[in-house]
Image (cartoon, rainbow, N blue to C red; front, side):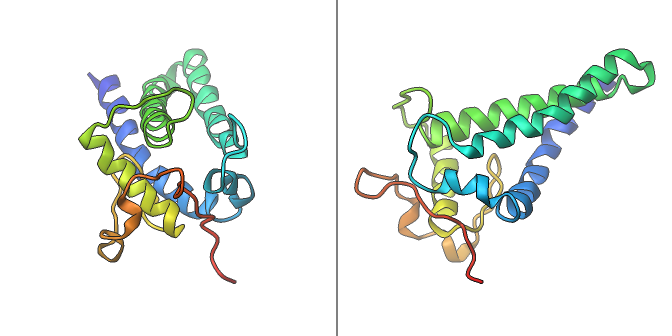
Length: 163
């Protein structure tokens, strides 16, 4: 039961962690990589795709350590929760919202709300930085960015702040 709880808490804790990393790392010193995600796509992969690879390393190391050091056992279920969040994030963000990697055409109302919030983020380069539970500021809720992108109006936005 404890392992399940650790996994669930780790999964839930990933949303605020993702918010903070997205806001202060990806839209901060990591913007040279992240800008590839906010601009037009030129191929199947973006420099931004390096972030999940980089972020996976400590989780993999922690899970491995949990299999070798008995008192670190709790790192394994934590890693499972973190990994599960990463899978959910990738499916909703890359597959559903951006239609990357597969030709997913269906529109799912609950996921459309998440995709609309993400379009607001791309349009304005600011809030919401969270994804699975995005909090859209009231001033941005009724913008044209909530409409799905079209060929003439793709999802863009650098997120760069004026100096």
